[in-house]
Image (cartoon, rainbow, N blue to C red; front, side):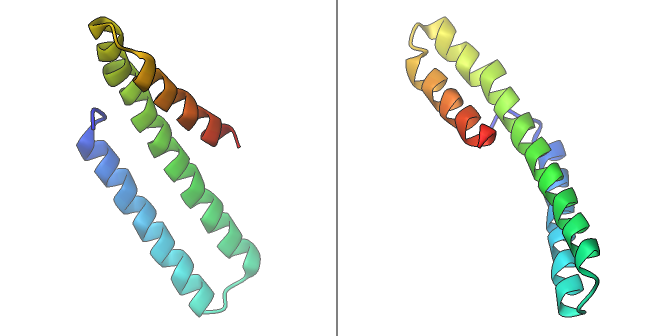
Length: 87
């Protein structure tokens, strides 16, 4: 992985903490809107991490593939991920 490993790891640990908090909220029968807001916050964090990883992939892996003269596989991978993100 070419993205900043420390930064990504930290953000994923934060997301894990948010998911644990959502589970506790469900177990405690907390207010639905509060649970939903926490889920939305976790999703936003994960989307940001995914975007950061994809950006690093394009900047490094796809760029390296372009420079080596064999970009098709890496470009197709990136396009497939972008399509999934748009859904």
